[in-house]
Image (tube, rainbow, N blue to C red; front, side):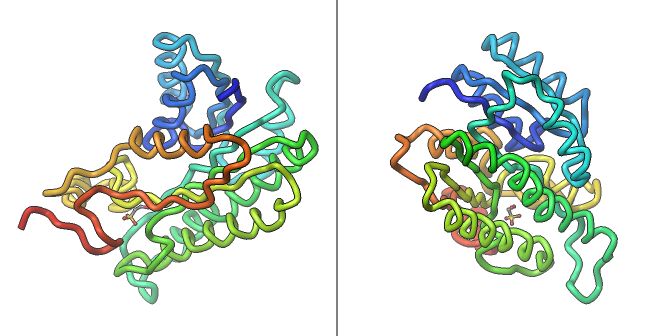
Length: 254
Ligand code: 8X3
């Protein structure tokens, strides 16, 4: 694949960090977004040191659409032509039942997983259309296919990511811009720690007895989707550990 400028949201850890590493080691230019500047600096240092990657940090909270617009406007001219947007930033807080959970926490989840993804798309895609070149890769989830216990709002958000991906693909059908929805299953990142509000033991329990995917594993799939020839559009990929079958069925050796 020719050299591309790749903007990744939520790039300071997990799948986003994995994507940064994969694109960086393959010679692409990276614009890395996240909220934790220290962690972003560490990713940048690693990629520059190990691979000589060109990395520009663009820290802002994706939920703040004015900050997003200002950050994108502030990009130096030679970084403005974004070829690949990896809408990766996402989270869930809690495993509460829909009729019992905390609406303020769910605002954070919906604002991040749905509204911020939409805002980033709205800000970046017009330039792609204008240039006649681009690829939006959204981080969906197996959670978007079927709801599961304690996942109601998160599952709804990821179902929304699927609908937004499908809708965008329809809206861009007369352009060369591609749209991909990647739907991972169990991936061991900070995701479960946040879901369990910092309870590390509860988070570890999620991956007990099964070898989960890593952020780097999912990044392989993201990179594959980005690197196939331009006439191929990987519309959707469901990727999970070998011993996982659905959002709720996994074999844990017993
Ligand atoms: C996260 C995967 O299995 O927790 O998107 O729904 S899962």
